[in-house]
Length: 233
Image (cartoon, rainbow, N blue to C red; front, side, top):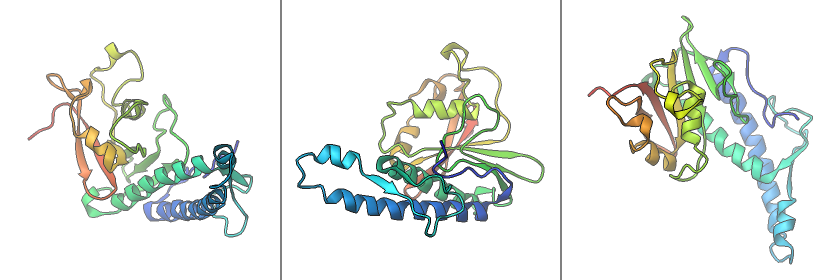
């Protein structure tokens, strides 16, 4: 099955990556809004739920962006707006990475998954990977959890993908190893409230396994850097 939006795996500038992802996002959101208008027509239908459930987003060839494959001609409305929300976090992260404040503005993109999750256990397969001229990497896991609760253990899974937590038995979680490069979680403003509370076992202890630094602390998207051990005051 084709990706809704193809990954970027050739080295490119952060600005070009942002442009390509935004073109795909805007195309999907436009057709998604058209599908929502179609769903509104069912508001007086006796079978409203089953009717709206079957409303698809039709993806026409007109103005089709580079990253949306021609083989994808329709898609689930729910999936489209969920993926657009995650892409909005990605776009905000790419904008932030271009600022001097991020100290990443001289990096380039070597991998970007706009609508597919990175694969656990595969080295340096993340939602977004940047690299500098010396080969140092910045690795991002991106999500749009809408609230503070984490029923799907998204935080723990993303830390495991980054290598900050081994994806194994909890008793082996707090090893001495730490992955190279800079590690980031990109989340919604609501989920950021959870990350500020050091209640999880990997954020407590003496010393704690890791800590978070909120490096983008404004707007609907927040970026946290994951660092080893105790935070230095």
